[in-house]
Length: 570
View 1 (cartoon, one colour):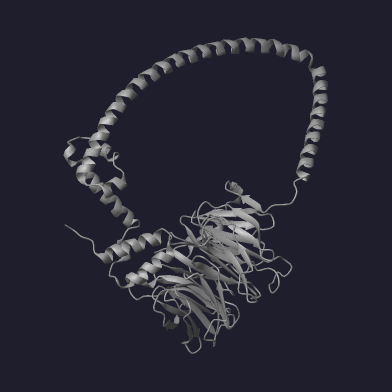
View 2: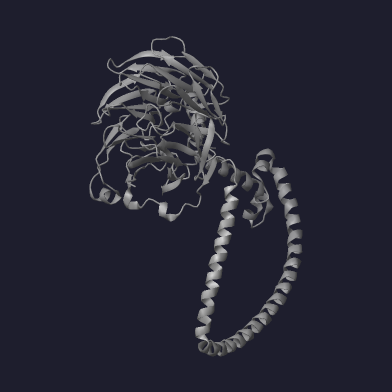
């Protein structure tokens, strides 16, 4: 008899967690079970392998229970057994259950036959009635036609008088409608204090759909694309995938899908492993451009950070972490790179000397996100529910923020570096200040885990100083919510998606927001009108969306191995 090894079982459970979107659990299992060391070729394992195994096991148990029944319709017998019965009862009990249920079924069938005969009689009676009614209707119709013929002759004679009468009637109707409108306006005027807006756009009109001529589909990755980022200075787009490569795409001005098919695409492939790709230990999990757009840093499941130039050449490999890197960021100056890992530590790397400058070991669980406050201090968040603010050169955290009751998925400093926003599996987002230990605001309007947050590029310290500063939060409850951070209040809820929202991004001018969801849709919202102005539906769940610096293109990376570039010149 064929048996399955524990390594094989671990691998298919790992794949199940990944495919179902339980990324943290998958990372934890992969790390503890040493998935990166196993010899299984990921390409040979089909999607949904674990479900298939379980289904096959249930089918086997069903066949075993039915073997001795000697009935031809074995398929029918399967419906008598529930999965829980199959797991908890032995074969003899299952066979007895099938016998008992069959007896009951035959009794029910006899009853049903009698009922069906009665119903058939009723139907025949009803049909006879319907035929009679149809004959009466036909007769009426002939009578009416005769009457109409006579009327037409009369109308012809009285046409002038009729016209005059119609004009008078129209005037009366217009006046009546005006009165009704006045009443409506008066009623609406007394609505009182405005509540946060619930913007529901589930039935988005066809006008919003971005035409295929404005969509460029970038193909080449052989596994899901989980990260993408535009260069801050040029037309370069970077993408990172589970196929152990990152890619740098040159997106020329005005190119679209039609232009794409005629000319070869300018793309550089940054291989994180020699030889075959799709090696799970080399997944590219995160990437970030430096401020000048000259260097791209990538973080991988193998625990290494790599720095590449815009020609696709590997400049530096940074090795010290003992587990997958989940997050990495350049500081504004570009002399330090910060990485956060599953090994519970964050490391600041000196890019010039290509050495690690300092390792921060404060968390008791994997680090999920990191974000620089300025060129020397930064925040880290973890599965241990904690947030630490650290500074290069200091051996203890500058600040400790405790208050979340679940894994802290994301941390982001506002444009001035004075407020820190965080979001968590505990269904809350929080705003923190360096001036106090407790959170300033506790944002509790979502109904499921909050996956990510973004500050608007507005308010003091931005290019749009006269616009209000907002925080956007994206949740597994399929909504995006916008918050007034000064008051700690919800300003509106954007309810256009049907599945978890994994990514949000503000346009550079702060007037639009893009959101990407597992429902395969990218929605672009106007924040002035608070509605969807454009939408695009791809062929896979969306893990990240990002705007280029001009604000006329959005990139989105998909679970079906593609990256899409949407041309948004309004």
